[in-house]
Picture 1 (cartoon, rainbow, N blue to C red):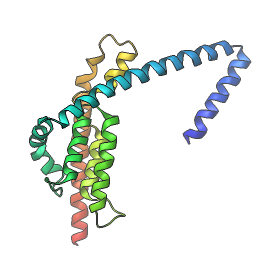
Picture 2: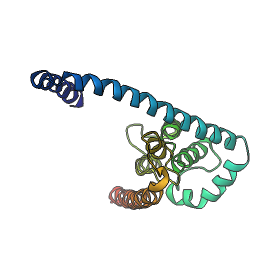
Picture 3: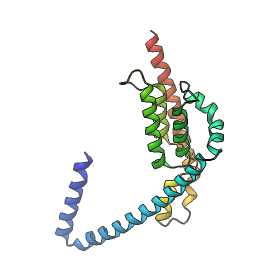
Picture 4: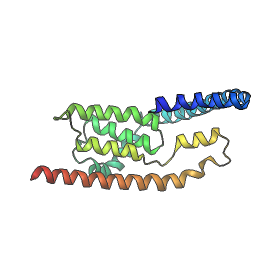
Length: 197
């Protein structure tokens, strides 16, 4: 759908600019937008490198183990079927910690690794396990303490106070996460009842 929509928009824009004599505006917009895109990319890469480096340092210290211990009661509630001594628990924890720090790009490969590990243990390969469903939901809700990517984008666009969105992000992502967890737990319970009948 989008593969058709965007080319049509571009063609229509060029035709309208030629007919109205505003071709210069399109040329200026192209150069300005490419410059902005490069600037934004550099800002995001810098931010991602910083936080990925901090995560790498944290992994090689006892900090991650301490965070995992703090998260354990929550993880037991969210993922009751995960073995806390195995690799999948570490991968899920790292994914959730990355999301909490607003590192969506760093969280994605960690989430994929966790999903692959869970799929390897899944006896029904064509169906999601409860843990897999919960991980997808948590990634989609993306609860964030530090919305790193959004702050980086706001900084690159010249915001006077790029961190002003932190409290609204907390409210929005916490609401989304609670709703998503509640709905997932409800559907899991309904599915178990259905299988029991």
